[in-house]
Image (cartoon, rainbow, N blue to C red):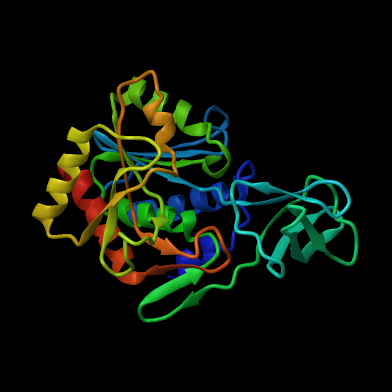
Length: 304
């Protein structure tokens, strides 16, 4: 969990993923020699801050978004949300502007719908603020801000250690409208003929999805994946004996929306651990669900 804690503490709100991208590139370069297959590592201007890891002869791609929700300083002490963060008066926010590091307090006026910060000075406009990380681990769970989606990134890195054939894509902007998966998926399709996607992201604990009962295979959210593809994934999970839960939701979305709307014939399925206290500083995930997530991804990347 040390790596997961490091990931959760890195400042990478949607649109400013560079610090996390640089961290991952350094981590990959240090560790890839120990992996079963040494991947081709693709990054640079052509991919903005995204990263592609290409292993062997790929048929399937894992998409894990690097960015988090947060806040942008507007004028005076006003804040604008990045994505859909939980907002409660008293949350601690951190960031940095030209005058130095910042730790301030979020204030939410529910009647007016206004978000502001309390701090000793005015923070420079355009500064991004994120939840202050308080990483907590017990025998059963991990709790922190930004498990969505640093846990999806962490899981993909665990899969990378033994992956023989496949692509892992670390994407940007997912929490605030997306944008990067569109060009990443085009590149993968045109260069490698890959058209099967797995979304390594974190979903919600609900009345039908419980912590500790296994990784979630989503049958639908606001979008509907191709049924035959999802059925293949469920069959592989059942045969492998990996604990899993089936999710049916009418809202929410992920990097999959850009695959669904692609000009290329991509199949996709959301596969991820469920968390409670979504988009707050106190997101919590059961360790049994983390273990089943990694196990299922390893099987799917081999069998699909």
